[in-house]
Length: 112
Image (cartoon, rainbow, N blue to C red):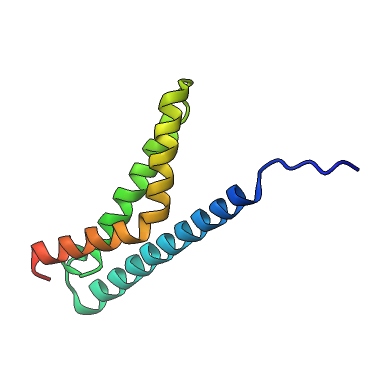
């Protein structure tokens, strides 16, 4: 049998790291959605008045940007695909940091 490598080992580890980063991002996002829902029901306050709402907005922004990048990957221009692939990779790796910064800034601006 021939030993055919579809992808090299370095790319495989990069894909695994990107998927782990995306999983961490999704768990942070899901945690804040659940906490905000419980807190708003328990304390009878608006969903927007919880500290988790900023992180939920951050998660929505990151997901929207990732979706936009995936749509741009459908373009058949190689230079555009390379740029979008780079942006998508950066957003995928930095998504936990981005959601944290957006949530922190929102909570600070609302003085929550």
